[in-house]
Amino acid sequence: MRRGSFDKLLPAGVAVVEATDCMWTGDLYPIESQVIANAVEKRRQEFTAGRNCARAALMTGKFVELRYGLESMRRSGSQPAAGRGYG
Image (cartoon, rainbow, N blue to C red; front, side):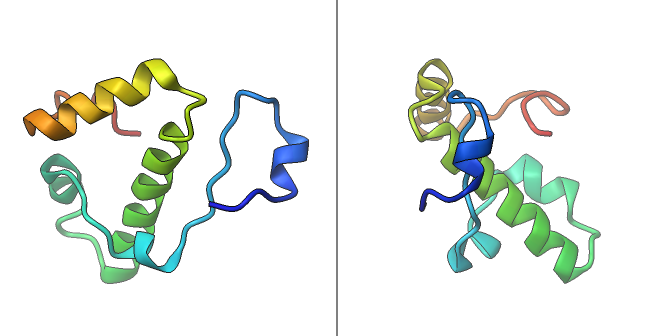
């Protein structure tokens, strides 16, 4: 993640992440994959990049209380209930 001009425009508590090449094809949680199962490839890539950017933004440390919750979910393999936690 690199710091750019958006960081100067947004409040200190806002994380800015630009999608890298690998974020367009990275892994999704099973529930996320189900949400876009019938989408065209371009839309799946956009969705995947957005979810990976959101996770990277949470991992910046600006959201410490949420970061630990996400790490716990990854270790346990659990997912939020459908419709919660995925925007």
